[in-house]
Length: 236
Image (tube, rainbow, N blue to C red; front, side, top):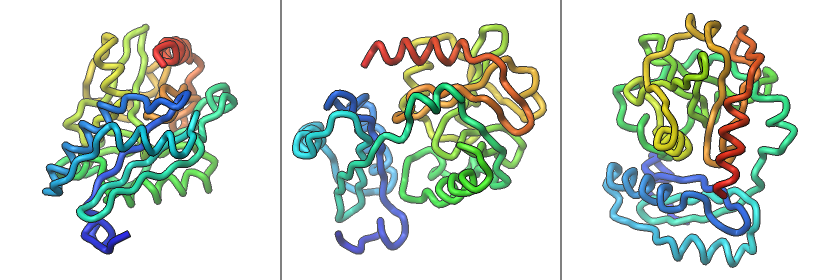
């Protein structure tokens, strides 16, 4: 590993990819987002699908989480267990609000870069407080995203999610859902949360995760989340 600007200043990008039955899920979409981030960082490098599939074959990976980390002088592929087990889906995620504000004016907010400190530190605090995820707001008090997830709400069967301009990373699963379902991108504030019937979060490793609570609000229903999760799993 070289001590380049990725290590010294966080000028690098990464993708975390679910591997199911030895196949990297949404590989093309992950590589497209990675290369977009690298272009933003002025790093002239590409990663081909063959490099990824060869690494999976060498690891003899069946179901795992693969991280692809790229900076000017480094390309690293590492593997770890996928932490999301069936019992977590059964109980649902417990969310809290973060006191850290998302900077919707920063271009780093919209790319998955090595500038990831806010997310990691807030995720660690969740372990201390008995939560699974923290939810960021921007300086206008609009909901943005979780530390590692995009967030969705359901009201009378209709799905809503924060619009990109609020300040959030455009997730791979978020794009999957937006392409396939009637979902409204809008501005959502904490005072509205109690009016929603349901909440769920998404990322590439968990797919779609029901939410049991956000702050003081409890969600009794998880019908939409479980339906979408089932339909998503049928595509794998």
